[in-house]
Length: 192
Image (cartoon, rainbow, N blue to C red; front, side, top):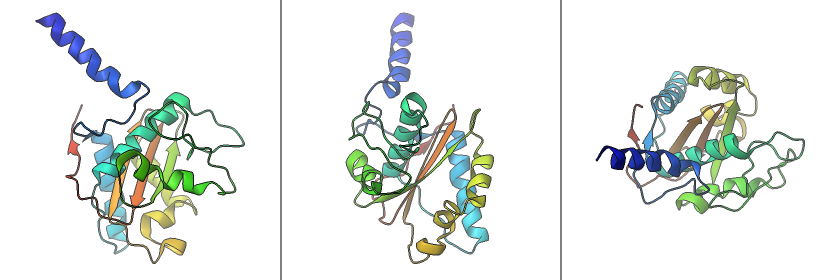
């Protein structure tokens, strides 16, 4: 009996790390850190007199898949930035270039991976050590390219976010924003 439980636990922890990062047939949980980041973003929006964004199971699936893919496969280079996706998953590979010419390869990932009905827009944070949600948000707030997505400013002023997904794994934090509501139930909070 003990050996069976041990093997089952190994399988549970191994599945998210193999080449199929996305398991759309299983319930989805978010960690305490991911929940903290979600709460911090909505608190920051409230300070800017903006409504909270509902947590999306679809965009969270994409976020969690991407932070794992980045951790396991991304190598910083001058050609492909961290919005890129490797060939080692259940998605089409994508090299997102600094000139944004291939932006659709990133925007399409929520449709491709989680059957989300619209484009998604991503912000990524990397730290040399384990990501801290407070530090990630602080860096995004200071960034002229990321802060506008958080508070619907600049080119995002006319957009209303109706869904958000978060993912944190090791040194990466990823947040996806969407303009369509996600009709699936929100992820569960699973403190590990």
